[in-house]
Length: 466
Image (cartoon, rainbow, N blue to C red; front, side, top):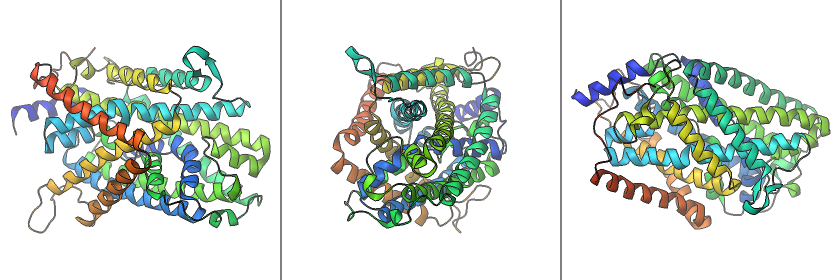
């Protein structure tokens, strides 16, 4: 073990506190995944695919994609159980450039854009409860909507909360996860039990539009978060056993919930009424339960989306903390709060970027932009599984082994690569913007390295705390 690796492990043990168990880590997965995606994306997916069966097919592909990715990440996480997720894996396997790009994407897109989109979704549902339109412009000169203002307030409040430490963060996410699962099960059972829908809506619709792969990018955004526990690996107890259970278990739970909800939405809404709409959950509730029931369901959905925003607010900064620790981000990003042990500066910096993006109010563009960028980084990370050393029998003693290797990562890579290529064809602007963001990251990396702005030395314990 070289000196830098030893110093890095020492820093993790001294600074980040391993306090999360299986349920706490799985709660971050569930709450990160179940948020704005499932309650906002289905309408866009349904209109992209053209009919109900095609819609369920895309959501099933998304489930397969997420599960195969979670299986691969479980092996990476048990081999390298430190904070940072993709950044940590790519920088160790491929080198600093790829690690930097992963962190760059996480900061500008993967977490910040996703935070902005989810917060806009929460605002749309919250205002719908009171019969208000989130698209009402409140600052005409800048075209800033009320939804954007509420999204910014939500981001700021959650950033302040998670800066208090990982223990309160873990408790909050566990409570939210349990509430979310219970609420969705009740929603599905009560909705179908109401008898006010039509099962023909599940199969009805026009001939498939052929935009399956664009829909898969949208679905990938809804499924994003299956790797959430990996970002907090430095704060998980017994990571070799805890992380695989949290990643795989959380993903399976969410996949089942997503399929059930999509069936419910199509059961509730007539095939000819589907239009791209953020608040599809509220519309379905109105058809099934009437105005009063819709208000109750919209309240639950709003809280669910807030839980997703909360999870992303906590997970993303662990990437920037790891980058600062390795000298690939300003050292101030590696500072932890004196009492709670949270990377406070990283939390606040991410919140600022997310608030700026929320000002655009462009939900669908943010959706595809974030989904494409996340797909690019997770694809590269899953490729790295093939680089991991294995013994003659193909086993990895002492680590979780990816089931079905080498087929499992191949399934993930084929689906993701196809979705990205088709995304470029059908939605070139937001998908292309994701590629341009990566190219900008390459340029910034080499400029920063040549000017001596990047430091190979990790953050010391003295400089690592506020």
